[in-house]
Image (cartoon, rainbow, N blue to C red; front, side, top):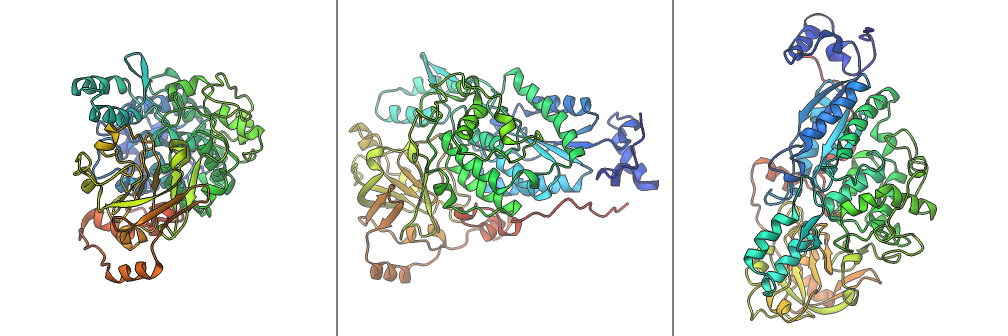
Length: 578
């Protein structure tokens, strides 16, 4: 094989080194059975895998990594797999979001510290995708994302059931006596019947689609089910493509432009995507120096209809979405209507317009056309302002009840999600359908980690009375699989003295989504008096990662990233200690 050891590749600072240093690096790698010829200067490709049995959505990624390796070998590169942590929302406490930034730090430092020329990122559960993108963007070596794919459709008693979404539905059925404990136990096995992440348009599916919309994932690859053979084909194709990206020096900084983020925001609206995309995209933009404000998520989606009829807003699931044409069909529809930028370059080396040209919409009930959408323009995420959320809050209109989008009602305040759950089943709880449930101290600093607790179940007595929705306001997040009229990400959060900390039982809360406002109808002088009485909560953490998190996490409108991680740090080769 041709000796390419004099190449300028980054990895040659290790494997092409002369004398003792080069001998050490190469000889230790050879204990894995690599022949000397693989150190000839060919591209060294890292395969970062978040496979873990503690993150069920990611457990199958080891097999995907094998497919990626095949592609890298085919293209003449050297694949080297390495593990990263996995932030699975399914098991981690208090919330996987607490560890997103830690995972992003780990991915960044592992890429920078090792002899890599490019990297393939294997993710699954919802926080792993943004964490890997954030870490890779900060290093700015060629990178391509391969998400693990959704589970197959859940099936229970002749109906499709969606992960997450039907958890909430079954819980309501259990509380109202429409379902028994034994039936619930059986149904949970029907809900998750294959490897993969949530098959609803929850945050995992949303972030897979967002990665594709940004141009960081191969076209069509967001939707293939985890157990479909084409998921492995996607991995193999990504392995081949990353070798070419190294040759082309196609880095995230060329892909993650302002126009790419605008495309991702509009795509998120069209697919009925998760509100969590707001936080993750804002954090990612901060890593690449793209100015992205909360109001962009409102302004850019007002003209975008919801085209995808998927749970939790619709009736279908990701498997149906895949067979209906997947994300390329959605993007082609938006592009044809002038709602996307066609010029941004993607990991294919081609533009968005070139990637979507061959797309075909196969099922117009799952992916509706622009001129006959599933929901009209303006039903995406709305950004609210007002004296209750001066720095913003969000609501997912497509998952809310239309009659509650304009509402005035008395607050019933709880200082934690746990405090609410302790009394939610009390038949004497002082609430009715007009009450606005306020849950605070669930923000980035206050909980800590900003958990997915905002869409708390309705009080049992209201469920039994046939009430199916009510307004809820919280400084935490909501699962992308959730639904309801829930105002989220109230900023500043209560724990840092945001106005949510000042609300008292009975205060009138006024929600006006068409007018984009959320306010407390309480006199300014009274609020000022309450602020004088307010004292910040005592610091609960004095050491360890959670202390680091609470000291440095930014507010939700800034993406809840660490301030010291904003911007990139490049891929300069560390000093050689040998």
